[in-house]
Image 1: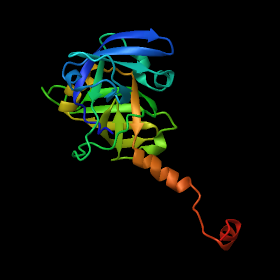
Image 2: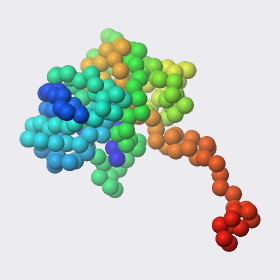
Image 3: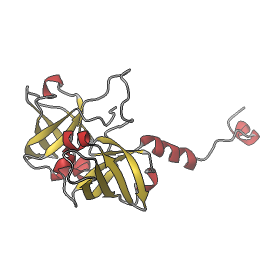
Image 4: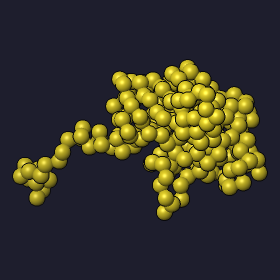
Amino acid sequence: MFTGLIESTGSIASVTPTPGATRITIAASALAPRLRTGDSIAVSGVCLTALDITPTHFSADLAAETIARTTLSRLTPGTTVNLELPTPAGSPLGGHVVQGHVDGTATLLALDPITPSAPTTDWRLRLQLPPALTPYVVSQGSITIEGISLTVASLHGHEVEIAIIPHTYAATSLHTLRPGDPLNIETDVLARYAEKQQTTPKFELTEQYLIANGY
């Protein structure tokens, strides 16, 4: 499990097609020394398995499903990615519950400074959700964008607005993005479970059920 609190950013060193998968290598000197082969790590919101670890780099294989569902298909050498290690059991949950299972991609519409002339300023991010994900997003609710735990400021149809503080803008890949870029989206898992509870038929213990099952 992750929390969406980005620990560091990394840079794509190489993208290499392999039989049945694509291997990426990431320069991540801040986190690579803490990894062991087989460890999970969230790369821009996608849970991957660390391989071929060195003191400054690690690699991961992207399955066809990962390439089809996420923005990782667009990685090229030099691309900045957000990195987070799993949250140890018992640690404070600073963001929200993030699984690293991307639901789909949205489109960045704009990322504008609130006060353009200020040396540091908040930012306003606007994105367009795919219709299938809109039911799981609510105003003031949690959403994960490129692995970052964020709070929805407002929702207008399929368009979402999010307030970005200066630290988040500077410390993540957000400052490298441009309008039109795709964004990895993981909706709040609690919202998905709530929907399942509402759509799952409720079990009712009846006399007919007991007779049919030998009671």
